[in-house]
Amino acid sequence: MDGLNANEQREFAARMERKQMKEFMTMYSKMVQRCFDDCVNDFTTKSLTNREEQCLMRCVDKNLKSSQRLNERFQEQNAAMMQSGQLGGK
Image 1 (cartoon, rainbow, N blue to C red):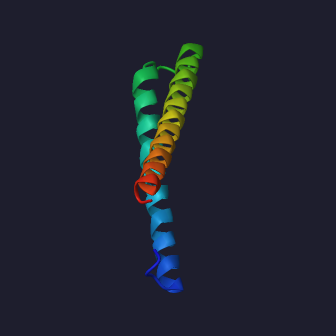
Image 2: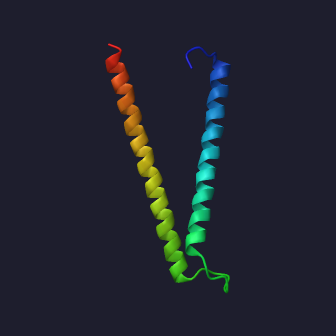
Image 3: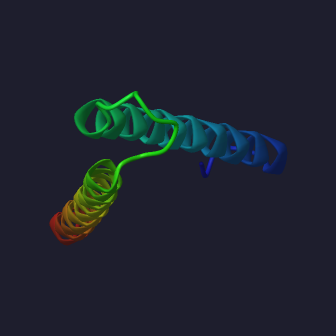
């Protein structure tokens, strides 16, 4: 981004923000669909059964924790790569 002027930097940041939001919404939609498909199977009532509700809560919790852990690992790997790149450049 060093070679970009202020307007180009703002546009780049806005594009990255839109891309991140789109990726988040895609991930969220997939999680909702996956958990619904796995947990909801009784369509004889309007409301969820206790079993379905507990299944959904576990499914969402598991997916969010998994996503958080993947993000942490990505950040760890990114930091390690940047550090080794900095050390290799000296």
